[in-house]
Length: 113
Ligand SMILES: [Zn+2]
Image 1: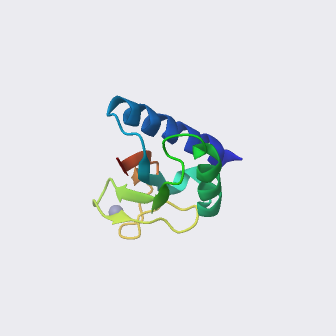
Image 2: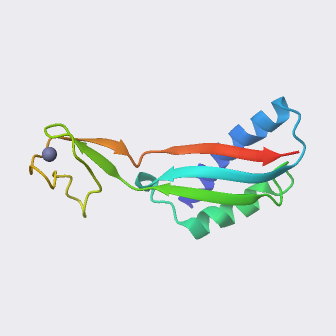
């Protein structure tokens, strides 16, 4: 399951940071996950529960903020969420656009004691 490796990578960061900061119990973990990763919220939740067992994150609440794909038009500067597979600017119809959001994968913050 794809979500397991996502969660594992993020938990490695939290566990390392918690150890460095003397945190012995993590209560909340907030993740930001871009649409590009195609992660299913329920699967993330499940992976989180399984992988936190026996760690400082055991029993912590998981919050996931999903970032939708967002493109910016290089011609007119308009920002837009693409429809389907098209990344054409809805303003000037050019194809010259840049992905500005949707690739995120990081721990926004965590709370612990
Ligand atoms: Zn445009």
